[in-house]
Image (cartoon, rainbow, N blue to C red; front, side):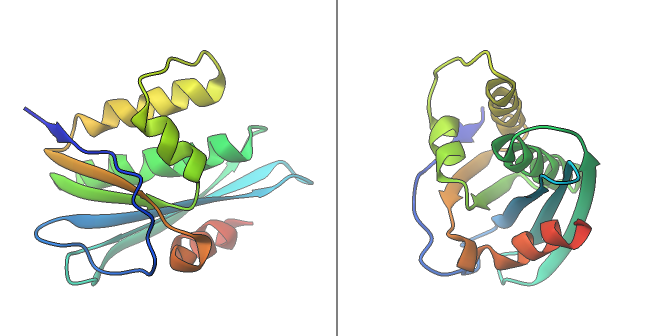
Length: 148
């Protein structure tokens, strides 16, 4: 049985994860003028060593919140494919972290994406979600902006 612990802890500085957890930092960037979005994901082990960094561009007209959710989806999918079972997801979107904790159903596009992220939680034995201000989520942010 999976143990899901979405938490609203606020990251005060980037630090390695404890135990056998990997840390997934994600971010999205948006260029509204050209309708282009960038996703950034970085995965580090419990020592803080880089395991993977990836960025991807998307040509679509969706909200900044949806962009952040797509970055979370990409990060969780990659971590799952890498075989990780215990993860910490960090992002600089406080509203999304709060959405991931509720059982509220939303019929918006963003609500469907929140549900998709929650569904990905089932791939992990342990997961926690944390808000990390941009200054502590800088690498993921720079990866997302790299595409733009």
